[in-house]
Length: 439
Image 1 (cartoon, rainbow, N blue to C red):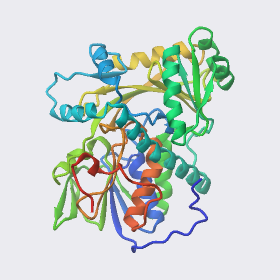
Image 2 (cartoon, helix red, strand yellow):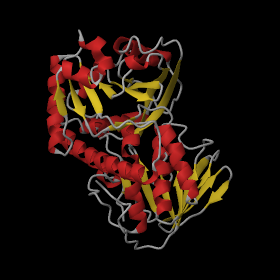
Image 3 (cartoon, rainbow, N blue to C red):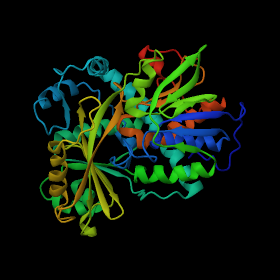
Image 4 (tube, helix red, strand yellow):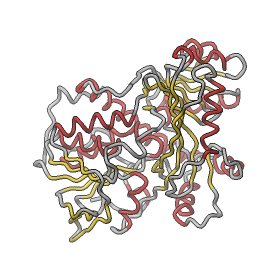
């Protein structure tokens, strides 16, 4: 386990003034670790407070076990079969006039090979496992509270064929350092008694990732922002970032609707909106938003609701307990930067929650939400430097922003401080797309 509390870190660069663009869970964790290094940090975001966009109501899982990329050999055909189903787990309509999607989709298809699947899984898991360790160390150091549960994540399968495929993926993840326990339906119910209703007719088996966790990403972000502010971080909310200006190979300033901001170093952590700002700098970030949906349900019968975070591999949905509420999340819609909530995408979440946990709630009152997840064609985040010596990228985490936030932040803080990061960054930078060569 990573232990920064009792280690002495060597700083090769003096403290600097740093601007972080974006106050989601990724930007906020970055600001915290930069402040821990003694930097003067300002965070800019258009929302009034940290964690109010993509981090607001996600699936709540710290899920290194979800390191399998979206791009896989069987996905193109499956996506075509789903194309005309408005409630499909993955929805896209390629006939829309959407050049960014077409460009992203071409790169996605190139990653739908077995060899690239395994390479991308290795890269994703490398960051996810590291980040999970950083989060544990942070929690031990600060005692931060965010409705966390450290009871693992249980993947459930409804058919023998899906269960066999899941075990195959699990075996590969185990070789990469993430062991999972293979479980019978009876063992699934023992681990999560609230599944007893489904186990009678609708469970083929499960895989348990015992070291994974769950917790409220928005609450974590808000609480960590408080800790960051206590270290001197300034959060500037309600600020619309208009452009980034460069001069002589360096970023010179950030222009906003409230004025210009200047610093020694800059971190771009704006999720799905990162490509818009990078484009003017000549940086092509292959990030496209995948709109995800969630519902948050008041639990009326606690014994009938799950206390172990679950992933329904058949329905492509996740379930997490957050105090007296249950978060249900899933589906992906490739429809540009459209944040409108489609009731047809919410209905499957309600239907499946009722099916698995019929007595947990009346489901009369629920809060539906949608958010844009910044997805790369290979499902690997974009971390590291750029051709501009003082611009760093911390974006493109897809569905794993909450999972990877702490580790990604620590990596960026190390790079800005002139330290060698504690994991290998091979394959994590923008240069893997041939779009930029970092210094």
